[in-house]
Image 1 (tube, helix red, strand yellow):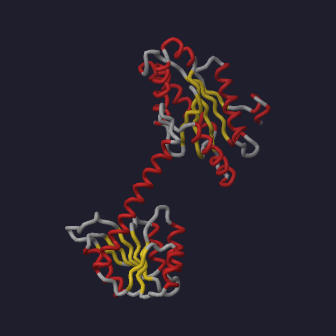
Image 2 (cartoon, helix red, strand yellow; image 1 turned 90 degrees about the vertical axis):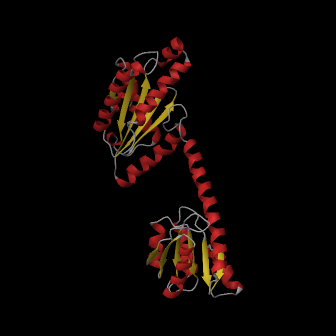
Length: 323
């Protein structure tokens, strides 16, 4: 495997990373030198195993591949690359095959274009430019799609995950608990007397308080901790590989921080939050989402009953329905 860097003055298109796959070293070197002269970074591989490794661990923008190679030919290798790709990367066959059947096989395998050997440098430049334009447009579309998908799962007011994101993540986490013998914890948080804040100061002030709590929770996320706005003034925190004791500690840190810092968050002054905590280790078997939420909700109800501004851990005696 050889990597060539582009010259100091790239020609036409912005530099890209081109993977050249050909068992003929001399042919691969000629193609690589031509592509490098056009201003692009080139990696050459003379076997399919190296090609798979480079493709899977680097930012390849285009593949130029010989159709006929020993062992795994270009047709099969193209299918393998397509199966592993998380982004659309154009693949161009370099081949001496001019027959129609070979081209149909290539298209069926996932090839985007063909260049006949020996490759004409001008023809290579034209095809390279066209394929890299497709690659650039595809990357832009993929980035926009990811951004839109993220926006669809974020609560606009608080900046944490929304209910849709929570409903999607909770069953995944519980499945992982069952399959990998892990643990998970769920915290439900509710701002105390939030209705009074809206009634006495107006909804914009209530929104400011919600946004502040979302910011505070966002600072607690990462490392397997994910925060969501569950609904209204209620929030949820999912903690991966966490027992009830550790979850209680996080809940207490959040409770103290909110009680202290909320005084400066809005004209409503200092506010408090009640928190209920449940952990999968508290169940004889992995609970489903409904039972897990009910357990954390029962603990939250207990925190409210004890006078609010506290953190309570779920106990099966709180509600027999969630045991």
